Image 1 (tube, each protein chain N blue to C red):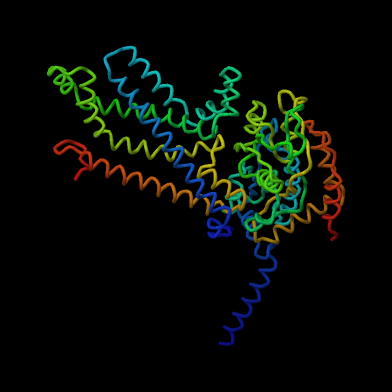
Image 2 (cartoon, each protein chain N blue to C red):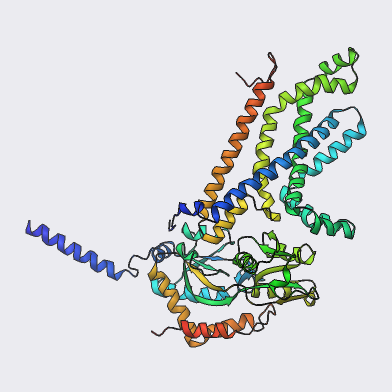
Length: 293
Length: 240
């Protein structure tokens, strides 16, 4: 009897020991990454310059570079020497479902971090700050949202921009006709073909669209910010151990100045000539989020 | 699965309103498109069975064009390319002045596409009757128009009810393609809710249930129609 109890105690004690020596105290994401020997990275395919397909067919961009740093840290944490990266293309419609059902372990793109979405997923620190602005043709006399009274604006279905424009229009009591489009290229087509007088989106994406248009000098981005859209890398919810690895990595990058270097690589002027030097807001955001060890 | 279920989201404002308005648009687009598809499809289908070679050729070309181009491509062409082919003023009118441009374009596009499918059902319905009835009608002194009016069409349409029911159901499901040109029908609203709240599973499940509900009602209605109009002793009697 005594022997049995001893065995029981020893095994319980051992199991506790075992529990602490395994890397992740209940981190289901790290566990599944280790089991697969693969990390599944969700990425957007046309969010220039955050995550898009490069000439060699692999995803590249600002968010991808940051994600790679996080993945390196994950690799070190679980002690696997060759962790394979499996690239999973996602769209704004599939990213949540794929993260919720465990297909992707990290999402790298241009996803706005907001409190409603945090009911479903978690985010790493804010790595980019943008907001809604309006693009229109030069000479159209449109600078602010007030100038759109009685005119038509294109909005991308289900974006935070759509929400912002409608809220502002309601607040100002002006009547704007809206055209819903399914993605940015179609929104741009609506503006170019004269179906819409303006197109609203995150200002960084508008600059991207203009730089890729047939006649960039014809268009302008104007007005005040109509919304505040902080971007962050998305990770599965309810796994603080895994999320912390990401937070530490990003904070280190921000503290060491490496985050700024990666930013400049993609935005100043960047491979797509987007030419957006770091804003004061983002510079301060980097400083604040560079938490000490 | 790491998913935070919240079924309450579909009953919350403004999402509940979106779902209601979404199903409203789905039904409006589908009914408007069906009226066009049924009338035009009937004409084209009948033309395909006539003896006149030219009208038969025209009808065949119509059917082949409209049923061989993917619906989503047709939607895009009607919305973005068609206005550019018109004279400048007319193009601008389509883009700017036309009432409810997205809805109208979607209904017309879906209607024209489905018309090609309806036409094939109408043609096969008429041809299934057989040459004998046609000849008998002509022998009793009826004109071709009268043969169609009193013999071929009344019998043909009764035979066609089951396949036409499928077409009618398909139009409801195909109406979801209208979201690509900005009609906020139920699938678009489900996407919208998913983007706003990240509760996509609830939104899409709701949309699925609503589609099934609408199509079930259509199915029951068509059954009733089929039973009401059946001719005793003929095929397609509602199989009682």
